[in-house]
Amino acid sequence: MAKEKILVTGGAGYIGSHTVVELVEASYEPIIVDNFSNSEESALKGIESILGREVVCHRIDCNDANALRGVFEQEQDIKGVIHFAAYKAVGESVAEPLKYYQNNVGSLVTLLQVMEERKVYNLVFSSSCTVYGIPDKLPVTEQTPVQKANSPYGNTKKMCEEILTDLATSGSNVKSIALRYFNPIGAHPSAKIGELPLGVPNNLVPFITQTAAGIREQLTIFGNDYDTADGTCIRDYIHVVDLAKAHVTAVARLLEGKAESIEFYNVGTGTGNTVLEAVQAFEKATGEKLNYKIGPRRVGDVPKIYADVTRATEVLGFRTTSTLEEAMKSAWDWQLSLQKEPAKV
Figure 1: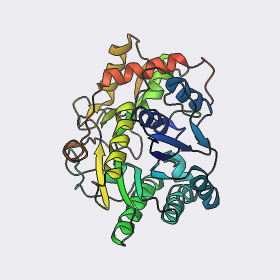
Figure 2: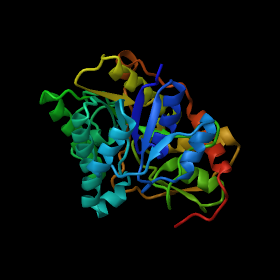
Figure 3: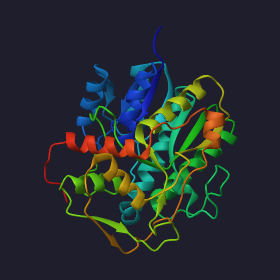
């Protein structure tokens, strides 16, 4: 029996590459679309090394409607789409907002138009807990009010969710599941794919691993005077392999016809950890002592956020299995597998 084809936009990226692997493990046939503006060709080699086979990849931009149409025509019988392709650096979005609106919002609109043309009606959308802003109550549920975004990046996720909601109420046949990620970390246990930031990392864990590897001189923790147990910010850190599996679960729900016209799910562990706890988990998991200092607060940081995952557990049928230490160990194994080259700054 032919395997069901799933188009994965941004499939060579950090979360996308892990999801491609999990789709194959679950007997789907992923079709990657990526323009490699924020990913590396080496990710494809890593995916293929893990799977022991080639994967289909179309090097196109999701804003190019004709190129997207060509992929749907060439591949035939695509059953669903997972849409990762987006820019994601908060600071860059503040400096270049039009770039972010064009790419993140524009590509979703283009994709949806082509999906409707081709009668492909199942979409998993890569959203973010950033839509909750600074929440009044913790943990956040899917009913927690969506707030004004702190950055153009965050606003693109909010706007994309609104587009999907409007489409759902319009009578469109497209059904969407929006997964609101918390903080993905770690790497595949094979250490053949992982987070590969271009230039200075924007996320905590690559900065931790690069500091431990001697690529960065020191890690700065931004603020230790927040209203938390040790004064540092609280986040919900989810292993990227767990997050990838959530996408596979969402795809199955859509293809089985169980989903409503639009559904939202928090995808996290349900546990908040401080930045210092994350550092300590890395040190414990790897035996490496980290050189870090406390710096001033960083503008725009949410003091604390973590998920209520009841809905994902009970309705989507998804739960995480990896610990924070396991995620940190996998991130370190990935860092060790990379060539020790000077970082691009």
